[in-house]
Length: 222
Image (cartoon, rainbow, N blue to C red; front, top):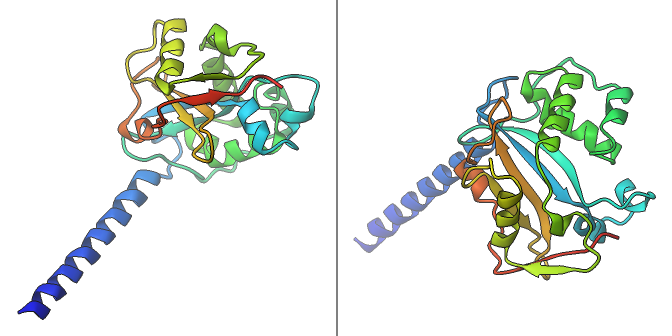
């Protein structure tokens, strides 16, 4: 009797593991068809925190001192997100150069196009024009425009600052993420938009990325 119970326990655990794996896979890759997605997520990366870990990156060594830069504009679904969609549309050097003020690392531009931009259903020039529109629609709160010293605050304070600076953003449309090694640092701010770049609430998958630390550090501009 004990052996039979143990056998059923092992079977149940195996099935649970398979189900969790399938759910995680579904959440990651819900579709790979260009243009089939529900909304966009604009990812703004806090460059000073990134440069502490990757000081040789182009954005960390030039004359310009970056604050928030664009990590990407990611097509999302209510569950999961598409990526690496099939596309014959090339990304030209001229288009990559035109977005360099927002995305200074050239490798990042090409990566974002192949991984996420191809899933937008747009040609490369139109996609990066959309990236610029999304970025320009967001007002960076004053405390993060040119901080000369480190700021320590709760993740919710970062979110509240963006909400106050951008009154049209609805609830749960902004997510602050942080590093999970050592003292938590502000990593990125995610802002969700519908396909027409109207602000909207983020999906549960996006909200799960929120920083759970009681406080985080916002490193100053270098």
